[in-house]
Amino acid sequence: MRLLRRSVLPLLLGPVLAGVPLARGRAQTAAPATGAAAAEPAGLVYVLNSGEANILVLDAATREEVRRIPVLREVHHLALTPKGDLLLIGDSGANEMLFLNPKTGVVVKREALSNPYHLGFSPDGAFLVITSLRRDQVDIYGWDGAALSLLGRLKLPDMPSHMAFSPDSKIVYVTLQGTRALTAISMETRQPLWSVDVGPQPAGVIWHEGKLLVGIMGSDNVAVVDPATQLVERRIKVGRGAHAVFPGPARDGKPGLLYVTSRVDSRISVLDPASLDVVKVLDVPGGPDCVSFDPQGRLWVTQRWLGRIALVDPETGTVESQRVGRSPHGILFEPGAAVTPVAAQASATAPAAAPVGVVAPAAAAPVAPEPAPAAAAEAPVRRRLFAPRAMPN
Picture 1 (cartoon, rainbow, N blue to C red):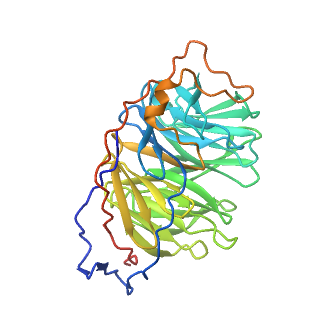
Picture 2 (cartoon, rainbow, N blue to C red):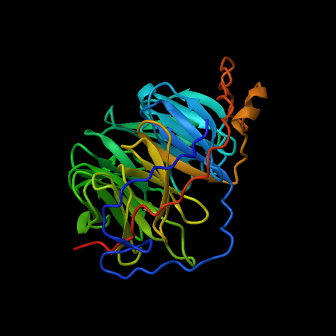
C-alpha cells in the first residue's frame, strides 16, 4: 500500500499573489531560489491510529508504509526509554503496553498494564509515570533499563491526562481534565503536594525555564504556572482547543521555539522561548494534535479529525498531508532507523532479537506483513496550504 496522495485544501486565510501568501501583521517575501533540494532524512515515523486499532510505520524519506501493527483496542501515546533502545506504546483500551524496537518497528513484547493513556520517563531515567484517563489513577513504575515494577498508584479524579517532570525528577505534574487542576506529586512519597485551578480541561503540560506551561483545551490559552508559588502568572492566547505544547529543536545551544496545537481552531501557534509571545501562527486543518520533529526542524503533525498526518515546514508554510488511519493521535519521528520495505518482510519468520532482559512471549505469532505496494503513483504535488502569520490581538 502506498501513501503518496496529498490533500489540497482551500486556502481560507487571505489572497495569494504570485504564489506568495500574505501574512497578517508582517510582510512576506518569497523564499530565495536554492539548488538541489535537501535530501529527506532517513528514519521511521510512527503514527498511532487510535480509532483504527493499529500502529502505522512509515519510511520517513518516501512516506511509504513499512508495516502496520495491529493492536487490541486503542493506542494514544508513546515514549522512548531513556537509552532509546525501546519504544513503549500504550494500548489504553486493552490495558496493554507494547514494547517495540524503534529502529525496525518490530514488536519485542506485550505486557498487561492498567489503562496506559499518557506515559513519560523521569529525566533521571529511574521512573515511568502512566496516567489513566478512564480509571482516574496515576501509576508510578520503577524502570531498571529492562523491566517495569509498579511502585505506587494514586486515585486522582477526575481524568488524569498529561504530565511533566521537574528537571531533578523529584516531582511529576499531572493535569486533571475533569477538575480544571494541575497537581504536583512527590516522586519520593508518591503523594500529592499541591493543586491549582488552571482552567477548563487542562491537557498538555511541559516544564520550561522554571515555569509550567499548560494547554487549556476547554478554552483558548496556555496557562503559565509558577511551581514555587502555585499561581497562574499569565495566560497566552493561542486559539480554541489549546491542547499541548511541544518544544522545538534547540537553536545555538538555547531553547528552541515552542509549538502549541489548538485542535478546535486548527492551528499551531509558535511561541518565542524567552518572552513566550506568539511570533507566528501556522494554520493546519483537521484538528492538529501531537507533533514530532525531524532533523530538518520540520513538524510531523497528526490531523486528528481528518485521519491524516501533515508534514509542515515552519519557515515556508509548506504542508504535505496524507491519509494514515482513523483518529491518529501520537506520532514519533525516529531518525536513522533501518527501513525494511513491506515486500521484504514476507520472508521474515521471527522478530529481531530482544534487548537483554526483555523476552517476547513464546506463543506470540509474527506480525503479518502487508501486501507489496502497488506501482508508484505520480509524484506528489507540493502546495503551500497556509500562510505563517502573526497572531491577532
